[in-house]
Amino acid sequence: MYSDDDDAALYDLLNAWDPGHWPGDAFYDELVAAAGSVLDVGCGTGSMLHWARENGHTGRLAGLDPDRAALARARRRADIEWVESTAAGARWQAEFDLATMTGHAFQCLVTDDELRASLAAIRAALRAGGRFAFETRHPQARAWEAWNPSNASDLTDAAGRALRVWHEVEAVADDVVTFTGTTAEPDGTVLRVDRTRLRFLDVGPLDGFLAEAGFEIEARYGDWQRGPVTAASREIVTVARRR
Ligand SMILES: C[S@@+](CC[C@H](N)C(=O)[O-])C[C@H]1O[C@@H](n2cnc3c(N)ncnc32)[C@H](O)[C@@H]1O
Image (cartoon, rainbow, N blue to C red; front, side, top):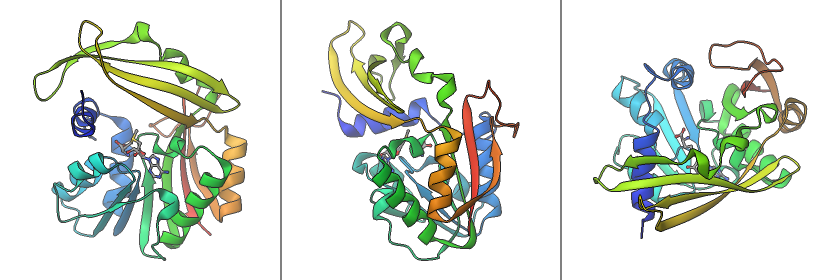
């Protein structure tokens, strides 16, 4: 009733990439512009790389994502490489200066095995000294507590269809949050329900996985203005370097 293609288009409407407006987008845009070759892991609809190419990036740009409908939108630009795969399935060897995971895509790596395999593949894709930049929501901010139907949003999609969307947490088990996202008619008639699991790693375990995978921390921030991680931080922003 609301297709994967519709859902991917809605994602773009709600999450337009705009470094002039969003500090997080500006943070990544600066790194991407300075890198000769970039691999965007969990690229979704590809908007970060689209922006980079449109704004003059002449180097190699590649995006990877397991979501076919999202990638179909990414493929609207043919001057960027697009690969349908999970991070763990990536097979590049020492080809990129920078790898990114934006939009909290890193939190989709839920199990220890998936995390280890993904970090190993990302590290392998980077040249010696290459960087991996990503962010993960700090568990102390308990972002999931705002994901409830009382925070439903009413909106109109790109096709002019009126919608109501909301989230609802099903379970919080250790550092994994399971929740649903519902897309409905304004009267509440449900069109689709998507279930997601996200991992909320704290700094200690995160750095343990990175060290084990062969990364060292080059920079760590608690916000997009490059402030330190504090007891009030909502984000853990990491720039790691391939050892
Ligand atoms: C919230 S979206 C972020 C998309 C994009 N990076 C952005 O900033 O708009 C998370 C993305 O991670 C992708 N994803 C989920 N599991 C993944 C995995 N194991 N490896 C790589 N990407 C994954 C999803 O398909 C989705 O496109």
